[in-house]
Length: 317
Ligand code: UDP
Ligand code: MG
Image (cartoon, rainbow, N blue to C red; front, side, top):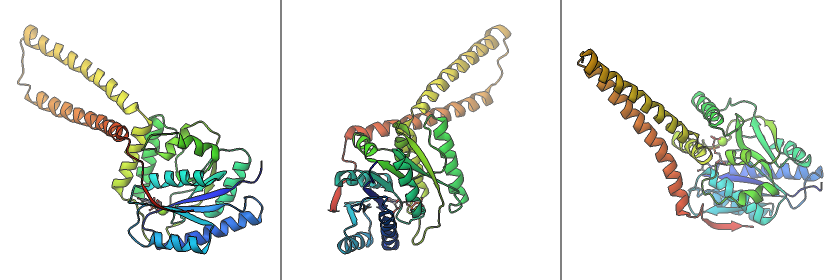
C-alpha cells in the first residue's frame, strides 16, 4: 500500500488557551511521520471551530496564514462536539485524504500514538479506535457514569468497547460511508462500530487537560448518552412492550383475585393501601415508559425536519 495522505481533525470550542500549542505539537507529529516516510507531505491538520465565543478562530486563522499545514472551518454557532467531529471528517474528505485521525483540542490523548494508528492502517484496518489505558484524569462520578453508559449500550446491543474515545483513525472508505448517512444525529462511537469495516484498537495514555476546563457538563453528557441510545438501539421500546404485556397479565390476575375475594369468599378488605401503592407504581411506570417513547419521538421529530446538521460560516483551505 502506498503511504497515505493523513488529515488530523480537531474539534475546538472555546479553546483559545490550548489551540496554538496543540497545533504546534500536531505539526511536530506530522513532520516526524513525514521524516519517517510514513505519510505523504500533503498531509494536514483540520480544525473545526464549534462556534467559539473566544479568540479560537482568530488564532486558527493566524496559524493558517503562517503555515498551510493548518486548515479549518468555523461553525456559525455552537452545534456540539459530535457535529464538529462529523464536519471535520466530511471537510477533510472533501479536501482529499486517505485517512483521518480525530483528536481533542486539549490534546489529552497521547498524540504520539498516531504513528501506531498509521501502522494499523497500513496493515489494512479501516478503523483504528483509541482505547484509554485508564480514566485516572476523570472524576469518580464521570468514570462510573461512563462505565454504566458503556455497559448499558452493550446490553442494548450496541457493541462499543469500554473506554473508547473519539480518538481514532478512519480510512477514506469509512468517510465515504459516513457521507452516505443522511441522519442528522449520528453518534460516532456507535456508527464506527456498526458499519462492519475492519476495526483495530490502539491503547493510549490520557493526560490531564493542559489549559482551560472541560467543555462538557453533565447535561451535555446525558444528552450525548440518550442520543447514543435512541439513535442506535430500539431495545428500550421492546422492553416497554414486554413490560407492558407482563403488567397487563399481572393486572388481570389481580382482577381475578379481587373478584374471587368479593363474590366467593365475601371478604372485601378496606384495600386502601393496595390501591394507593398500585396507583403510584403504575403511574410511575407509565410516566417512565412515556419518557422513553418521548425520547424516540424527539429523535424522529429532529430527523424528519431534515434541517442541516450544521452551518459553516467560513472555511480555510
Ligand atoms: N468540543 C466541541 N464542542 C462542544 C464541546 C466540546 O467541539 O460543544 C470539543 C472540545 O473543544 C474538545 C473536545 O470537544 O476538543 C472534547 O472536549 P473536552 O476536552 O472539554 O471534554 P472531556 O475531555 O472533558 O471529556
Ligand atoms: Mg478533554
